[in-house]
Image (cartoon, helix red, strand yellow):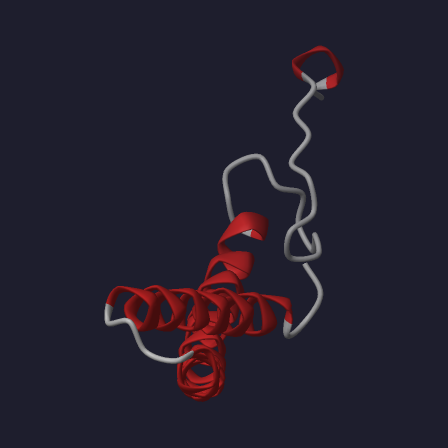
Length: 97
């Protein structure tokens, strides 16, 4: 996943959810169309900003977790000495010396 994708996805989902809920609330309340759409656009903007913040925090947590787990892969049993972090561990019992 490319950097920033989780942030953009979260912002888009929350923005659209805010817009949809606001439109439904306007219809249920029998508000005029222009009032409902204006409020829905405002709700979409606010929810998208909240989504950017939440998505950036989630992306930061995911990146930190990946960074923490990477060094453990190279030090796992069967890893060749000096292997790069995240290198695949290969074990061939036939060619043991």
